[in-house]
Length: 405
Image 1: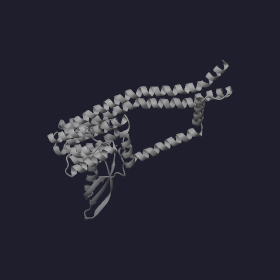
Image 2: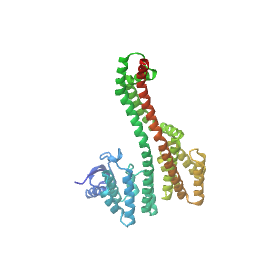
Image 3: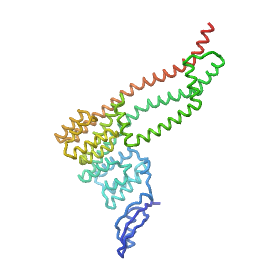
Image 4: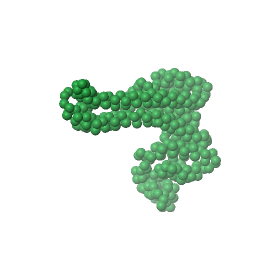
């Protein structure tokens, strides 16, 4: 059975009176045809978003990989000479994501009804981010939609590759940190109480390290442990809420940029994303000011985002790109100088691409260095913690043996 969609309409009847209402149909064209058969002149006809809320709007399950494959296949079909509606019809039927199939189907119906591809995609901001929409619009204007879609796919693939490398590098320390926490809690809850009973039977005064360990164990198993757990959860929720605010995000992103070791990698990652996105948009023919608008929203760091917005304001007043970039402490002089050369030679997109490649390599090297540093550090930390607990547990026994001798 075909899925029906609710549409809101505004029409003029035979008497010239404007009538508004809602009507269900399989597509916009089907509803429009039905309204014309009823003798109405259509003034406005749009899908009712509140009547049929797509899951895309709330926590989409569409992955960037699905969008990348869609863009690459779309480009291939257009290059082969297929019409947009035919391409969307084929792609809508073969995507692995159910949500994406529904979105592509709706985009296809809107295009068939006379909307441009970029306008139809703009109705679905979750799967199609601003960079996608603006590049498609530029491709439509320049008649190079297939080339633009390939650029979109390449951009998303590079971005996904960099994210995957960072995620992979962080997996080990997170796993080791979790292991350390589990071992500590297990020893405090199960091991230390067993030794504590033995120490009570032995009598005498316990060494200071053992007293501290026993006190911690009592706290973990008692009300202090519950309070710490609840407090930690509350602090995490409060932190997430604070970071979700514009001021909180700006402060936190600034702190991340100043952190030792990690700060440099965070900065390079933000610069790589800035140059890659900016270069991709410029190469696709998107106007500089529009490109900077998109870049400021996708920088991934509020400090960099605000710096880009200031650069955009300066360019709007007639400045070059390089001059306001150089006035911001966020952008290093090498990046500014290379962009200045790109502006002078008329090869800004190529220069931005080279800068992005450079920072991608820098991030990759930084991630490898961080991984090689963290692994032995985590192992040493685990060894010191567990070893310290074991020594603290056996110190009373050593005292007893010494007294016996």
